[in-house]
Length: 628
Image (cartoon, rainbow, N blue to C red):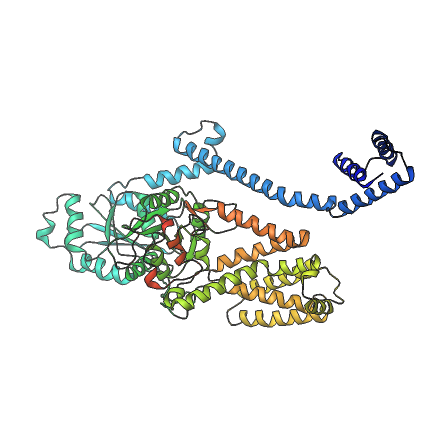
């Protein structure tokens, strides 16, 4: 057999595509014999067997470069499992939204079930009583109205009813107020003194023939107070008095006059503890809504600043404010915010966190879709970008919508300093966020799966430090991370003088003791410490919580699939962020809906004169921020 015939044979042999993993060697030899005889050559059995062995070795070598079945299964799980999870989450979110829409449609239809079980239930009975009380009208008869108010208030020791007689008119009257919420000086000076000591002149009293004349005279000539309104509904009257207003009931008048303003003990405006700055205003919101709106007016002295007040809460009514720039904010955005707030049905929104969770787009997402802040300057800056602020009575935290992920890594101080420093500190924050998210996961993947990627000298150092550690890298990383989280939480809950000291001392003692006991390696202590410090550099505390939670997911991905798992976890996170929206605005803006002008205030904070346009993602009416 010459060289040309051997080459022809080899090409035919390979082109047949036979699988040598399962074909018997006997069938291969018979095929070789037939091929030789077809060429008119003499069949040499020893040469053929030798040649077949060479081909077997060749294919075994080629097959050795392919991953085994376990690797293919892992790859399929990593690729398919995220798709299945995202699909299931999307279906669940769609079903929940459909259920909520059907419930709202049923509630708005006004149909009441006629079954005896539902009619006799205690819950519906209480709700009916509250509805009847809120819609009940005052009769205009002094004795009946006093009894209605006393019955509605109940035996509350802090609610007082002071009855007296109006001088000159000789009509009975009563002032109802809550001790501690109503200003006593205002009641004594501007209500009781004008009515009991000064009284109404006889000539004026003879002209007051109707209840309308009496109410008009008291409001315009007798009571020197700023805030005054008339209420003829029992529910509104009780709500106002329990909020701190005083109710004046006069015999001969049809309703109750609500006078004064609430005066509860409130703290003064101080610097926010959660958003401390080296340069910037030293003032923050308080728990009183009118003081917060006053701060907004003080920082945004413009007639276009629109403040719309609504009411939320079924049992406990609370005032809520929507603030926006009328000539900048998109009208559709304002309508959407107002619509979502009006759809809230809850007994008592204790804090703005209730509102945040009830108006967000995707409740399955770990990322917050609103920004909370205590700083009026941050709120005004957001309003000037075309965003909307939400302020709730009883909490110093305001909400800003829509929000992007880049806003959570920005600080007002970025704009108060020069652009070089602002850009540098932003880059540091992005790097710190990446370290806080993937630091321990990278350690686990390199130690457990890819030690060959570590430089030789560093690898030898790590091996020496890990000598004697009885746990795998994932277990020792979890031990340290859980210990750090417990210390962090304990430092927050303890009293202020003790908390910081306990956190520092506890971290040093636990870290040193763990290393001396051989439970963890010193290199891991360094990794965990750098990770914890990096999480502290994130300006928004709530954003830091998100990264801390996701860090554990990255660690488990690294423990299962190594560096490949970390990459897949990061890609899955990026794909979720790309799909996420906040009030119709992409959460990853300005990366998505790419506009070159918006990148001037993204990772790099451009000089002030270059940021002449507002962000395009908010769809504001006026895009010009600076006039040339």
